[in-house]
Image (cartoon, rainbow, N blue to C red):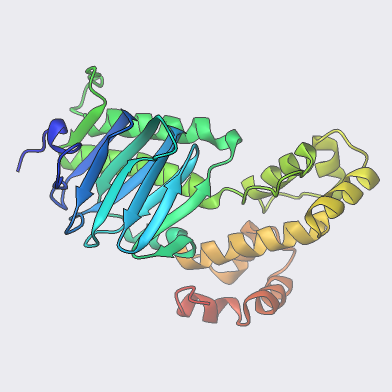
Amino acid sequence: MPVRAEGLTETAADPSPPPGLVVVGRFERETGYAVDRPTGSDSWLVIWTTAGAGLLRQGRTELPVGPGDFALLAPGVPQRYAVSPSAATWEFWWAHCQVRPAWTPWIRPYDAGDGVHTTGPVPELLRGRVESAFRRMLDDARWTGGEPVRPAEEVAVAHSAVARELALCALEEALLLAAAAPSPAPPGVDERVQRAQTLIAADPGAPHTVASLAGAVALSPSRFAHLFTEHLGLSPMRALREARLRHAARLLETTDLTAERVAAASGFASAFHFSRAFRERYGVPPGAYRGSGGRR
């Protein structure tokens, strides 16, 4: 079944592409734009907003989205999305595809109900990289073995198996960046504390110390530790420990690494110390957590 770009949007009851296809595009739409699918989509729909605002409805769930917001809508649930009534425009990347099984642990914590998953706004530091991943997905969907063709229309359908896999790899990077990004800091948090949070989240297994983090944000260790605790309510080392445990949990969910290797990759000095800390945090040892599929 061929898919035409003009058939994907702005219709009274807009059909979705067949579930086997990978389709990606970038839209800039004004007030009045809306897509309505009373029977839902045959594939997952991924939307990442770059400017303006949109309003997503899936089943009984309604979700406003703005710059940086990443949302996934599961198939089979009635959905409608449109430019938000409070905005003049909505600019966003979108993709229709089937999600890879490996993505499930990444998106499970962001389930908002009715098959809607939203990671919240991607931090400013990562938005350029997410944009690049979507741009690469668009190019890869057109892959024919040579230089990518870039027509004016920013919509592409991945026809070949290679093009589909390349496009999904690019989407996987965008999704992983969104899912792994640190939660937005509460209003009023010092930007140096936010930068330290980003450094921890980017590589929890690195040998961070109060001194190294303080140096990275141009503060003395004592001033940095006081500021961090004052703004976030926990010490830098406590925040690092929590980030390492979350990182370890994701490795247990998505890889076959041994507990010893997970401990080392997550920055723990020993497998014994890791196992004890993990049990305190999740209520079960690492092996049992993996056996449960991360359902805790």
